[in-house]
Length: 431
Image 1 (cartoon, rainbow, N blue to C red):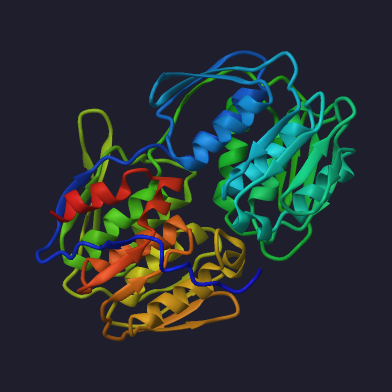
Image 2 (cartoon, helix red, strand yellow; image 1 turned 60 degrees about the vertical axis):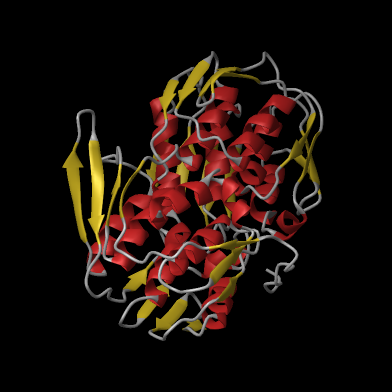
């Protein structure tokens, strides 16, 4: 992926609020982007109507809904966070804006294989350098015509593809596997996906995909680095979306860096979301982490330590938490090594280079490794933290701004990708 390019300073700079006392706060987190967009795909391919409760409303999920609508799926907003989805008798040709959403650019092309005409895909300029070859070549192997290897591209299919066995290198993103699996039941013979590359990142997201397929009646056989999805009818379903645990992590980090106590409502006791790993990470860094029973479910409560410790962590399964953990590491009292995350160079931006650049810009000491980051304690000073149009870079800056004076976060609005209104809630929390 291309080197990080500084975002123009003409973008607005948000004065990150600084906490002068320990933060004590209770936060309700909107629904999971990952679960919302998988539920939308399965509802669009189902044999009957579906209802999705707790829909996350964000740029990424709105792009997904609009992408499916462009191919003839009826998605009715019954309330702001409840959708009724009616799949069409036949998907139609269309034109799809992926924005910068990896789930749209990687989950929807296999869906387009069932359309009755060409489906054109494009997105933000920054999206055109995101890796796409693995899934597009896989579709070609399965008998689907694809023009071009990056955005913009066009998918065209002559009837229902037969499916079969496909070998891919998904070491750049687990989304390549999930994208194929979600549509696989509709292929005549189903699909077997074999991963043949290096270490596969973000396995919990693939486990999430498999669990959701099984929930709608699809048989999935799993062996190491291979997934076989049998052909079958996807049932219409009532989905209830969990809170987005990755979006909760900045709020829990606020407790960690201010010696405060933050409670996140309705944290699931069992989940496939990678964000759940923040519990053990915060404990290892010195926090007190506990479940508190409420009337309907459980809340997660985190209390920050007197001294925040660094961490040595293989994050290959939980790469999306890297910006939050890197921000914590930059404020810790001992060194941290975050490894197993070379694939983050192909995310919304080159996150390893971006985090290194921004931490060091503030006086920190961060070194980019072959597969991660090495962060050692150093006093930080104020300045502008650049977001690179990356929502998780922006929230990392907000965390650091809690304890560093005069820190501005450029383009905080990029958080609307997965968490509209983040900055308002953050300001309310800090008070």
